[in-house]
Length: 259
Image 1 (tube, rainbow, N blue to C red):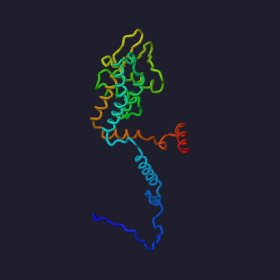
Image 2: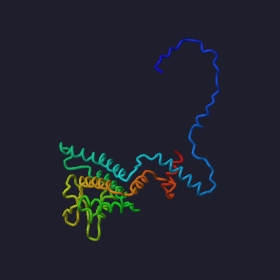
Image 3: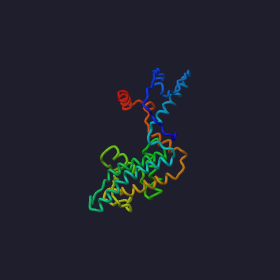
Image 4: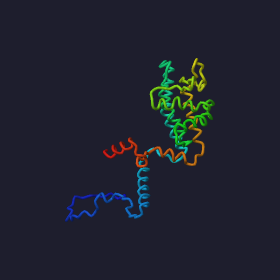
């Protein structure tokens, strides 16, 4: 092929037109197996298998191991929350917001992440219970003080800032438990503050971030027998066919039909 080809201007002679012998484009599309199956259960299994293949191919973020599941959570935690912490810290060094920080925003971001980690580890039907369990066990393992306060912290912070715009207090009889949120006061994290008439639990946002990072690192090094991977990947789709037909589900189905 190294020999140079020289083209000359010569008549082409008689040209014969050949009819198009290629099939139409739609026939080039790979079709799924259309073999007939008469048994109803077999039909259902085949349709479920095909639907599973289609859904699986469309899911972004799917993990292939338990370690990768925790790794992805950790990466987003450090990229999002860690970046905010760094920006606030740098701002404070040059005199910006000296007496404040995004306390509630940090709580809103970190408690759902802690709950998600608990959901992967404990897999209880109640995500609230999963959060309590991970606080009193995995968080306690990286910093003493969570055990004995896990349920209180869950009720104080988790529900209130996820579903409302106010932190709450807990009341039982004549006793009241409140909160005090701080920035960069790790040594006082989870300690009790003496306030007349109320028990106040100090909660430091930077300490909680450090503990959450440590819990993720610890979980990455443990064997979970692929249960974490399966549960994590299960988060990626919400199969409306498999859910009870509540009002919101019915509305979503109607909207999807009209898209």
